[in-house]
Image 1 (cartoon, helix red, strand yellow):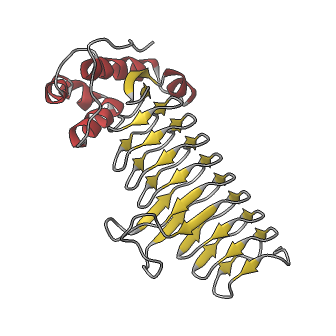
Image 2: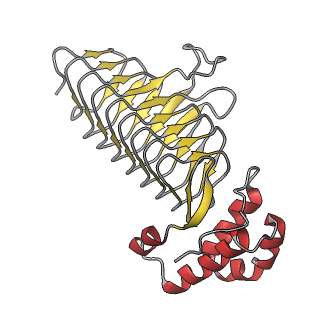
Length: 265
């Protein structure tokens, strides 16, 4: 299951079912669980823990020391990756730093397309799709079911809420609430991820209430605190609105409304 030209350190721990392609390099401190395939010329550096049934495509580099100037190879920071992820060609996923938790963490069922960069101390949930060339600075948190278009740039320490959508070329410098679509550089709100929510079984009542919350935050002209206050009753009744309200309340860099916005469909 391991090609004769691959270099696998004796201190790496690979499940017997793991396949390793030609010229791949796997260093000490790497743990890879069953059913995972590591393709030609991929590089895995430890400390790194990878779950089951992941696909690592050619020339991906996972677990390298971060580009933060304070980071050192001897640091015991690491990368943790869940199950059933597709990590395409030339993706780079870098270790955490002592400036944060020390862990870069990726959940399960994610697709990282060609040339995606996941910077140090990022945290990704599950079922996310990051299209070609998406670049994540350090300390970024992404929820579940988030989609980014090609060449999206995300400033360090930003947060992208679950079910949000960033159109291709967006430059994200503020936190994106759950369910919201953004575009342009710098990114601005352009409605709700209506099609994504429909596909995931959100009810008409849920959609109606989320639209009300969107209008309060991004069309009404209210400040964030005032919008949160006006949505307090609806947030108590609807868990999705509550998630949106709590996200905006906790945000240190909330997405700003504009004088004219697109109405959700």
